[in-house]
Length: 85
Ligand SMILES: [Zn+2]
Image (cartoon, rainbow, N blue to C red):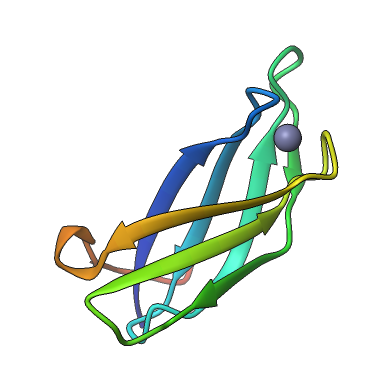
């Protein structure tokens, strides 16, 4: 399976990330706390998957905001995800 990672920053300065599958559907989301750098799971959803420009919505676990960011499909860098071992 090929995945691409998108990243953004929340208003609270938590660093957000999400892995997207080949159809731009978010399969995993996370947030890094701004101070301690601890990584927390952050629910992420893709809005408009399959379009040239789509949005990813995160629920930031640090501040509980809903964060919406736009991404260009052409800007995604897909890589083959290999299972460990
Ligand atoms: Zn936040």
